[in-house]
Image (tube, rainbow, N blue to C red; front, side, top):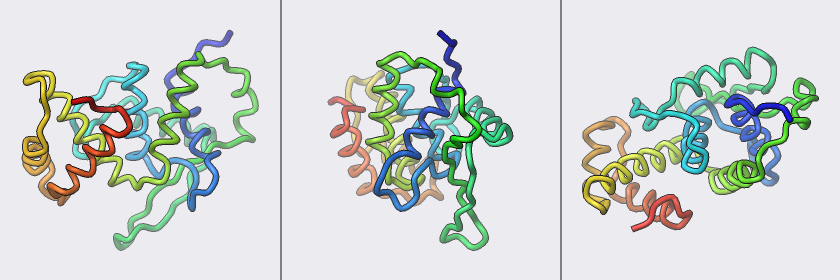
Length: 188
């Protein structure tokens, strides 16, 4: 059995996201979405180390993995214009042609289930939504670790303090908490 690398895990996530039917744009919508998808996957697998960054939880290793997958032709990157003048999102999809041996990799069943679950839950959300969900989750877990609870008020204040330009509202925090609780990422 071939050893599974962190890059293989990211590539499998991109592959599964590329196969979801019914999406306007299948795949992973940019590095931010890849970061946040792997952040939630990490809740089950605990293989990446995340710290707080400008766009929420961040793992520098994932940035490098994304660049390597792109430069090695393992993923197809398509630039999609955004609402912001001159800005693009680099949508990532799996390249079947460049990954002919990828099906030979045997992932542990639990990993496959977790990756499928994460792609199913997060598909269709914009990178900004994923940033909100991951940011709220990150600080809710921190608050819960120290106080046994998390509160929307604390989470909103924390996001306002750390991400004042993001423009997240108390309603956004409530929406994120509902999403996280509904999908079992947080438990009261």
